[in-house]
Length: 255
Picture 1 (spheres, rainbow, N blue to C red):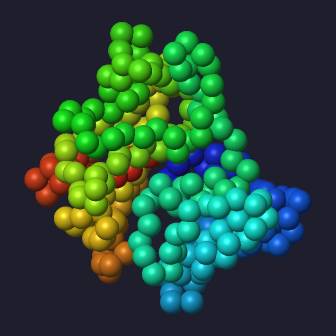
Picture 2: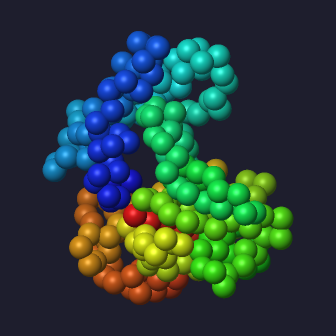
């Protein structure tokens, strides 16, 4: 998440102070999450007592959801933040609950303009053919693979693309084709900055790791490893471990 444009992070997360102004206790928890994210963002070293290891922020997530349900009289899905791994999109959806993030992805759906949140693009892995262009028809000559909905992405500062690989608790390893950038209707390019991949034979277990772009090179980050592995170019990423990334990616982040 912290690989995206710094101006977006500052506006939507780091500079916010009154996310839940009518609920003081909830806003206090939100500020705690914001401050923990700041520490993670700025961290140079990892220690057992630092929120950089995510233990503190997981506890805050649990407290926040409990308080959120009470404050707004809703029933947000109960997630076990302390004992179970959660899907990456669940973490991003938590950000949408905590912070006053504006829907700034402009789309045209069946001829009508609308605004979406950065975490809305979603792909079903059950299809036999997978290509990011099937879900994001952004050029005038592209037609959506979906017959019931034609969506054109006009503009967006960042875009998080979720790939659903769970079907009846079975993991689907369909190859998902994607490239290093997306050109939107307004002419701007969004560049791929991070890829989350799932290791394991089933979505109910396994392990998530992340491949991040730093400068012109890509690196593999695994919180169960003491070292960072340099992969190389984006083409090297696609070839890494015999095409492992395209068969196991669960989230793509463009900025």
